Length: 365
Image 1 (cartoon, one colour):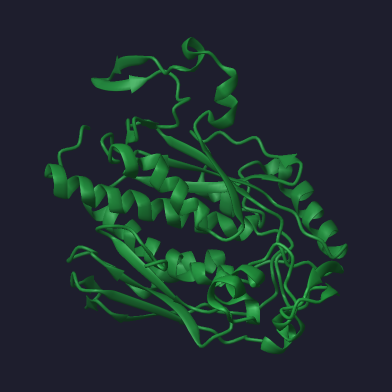
Image 2 (cartoon, helix red, strand yellow; image 1 turned 120 degrees about the vertical axis):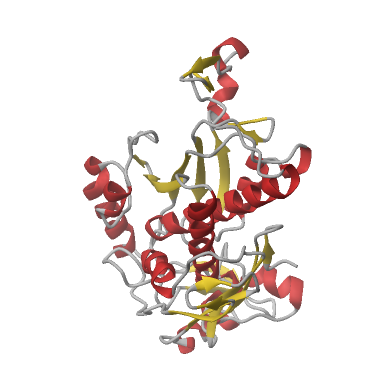
């Protein structure tokens, strides 16, 4: 239902921010894939809280435990259950928010839909829910490595507030991105971005920005016509992440300023393969990958919970004011990078398995 994603490689996440734990059940993973907890832990460590001075100080080890679906480190083809226990809950920090709606958060809309909610940490609306997605994507990555080696998914911080990084999707490396706590691919923008986050946090405020992502070495042929176009699936995946407000691929909105002759990507035969000499399509045409790098961007709004006072209302309908408490990111962008990579990996893995099932694995080189 609403907590499940994917068709053949299907995940269902569970848990609340300040409950006993969070996790995921993966259904449809092929058998015979080598997976262990250390592979999953590497990815979870990239999104966990408390990892640097510019993210939420909540202290969680986010230790993954695989409950089912493996034997001697190899997938069985049966459902894989992964759980991460919550160990640093502080529900008392949310006592006031239990009766006062945080502006631009999901508090009011959850009440409007369900008639009740888990107020501590936002419950299912918390980014802590994404632990299950990141854990599942670590498994999906191993599936792709086994069945189609060479696919690489990299994301980085493109902008924070009005600070814009200059990054080449063709050449940016994992080492460059992970070599700084902001996770930008532009070394010149590391310190300005850190200082901006520290500044707004000191003011009790928050900022947003853009995460850019590239999928390299994706074979042509992935994606379904009409409703399950590859870019539509990527957009749905990205906009399901907390705090997202926009998605664009290739030339995006800037492409509207070009004519057809300026925007079209010419085809040429290069080293015996059909290639394009430009990539304004962003690696997808007609909803199907064309073998070029898939490049897209995701907009994240400023964190909704801020420490300065704002006007709001109570659950009983009274006007009031609220200043946030607890531990929150002043900017979600650095921790959003592995989340974007995870969702992109899940989409590619699912569509690779769908292509293999429908067309017998026939993919152009």
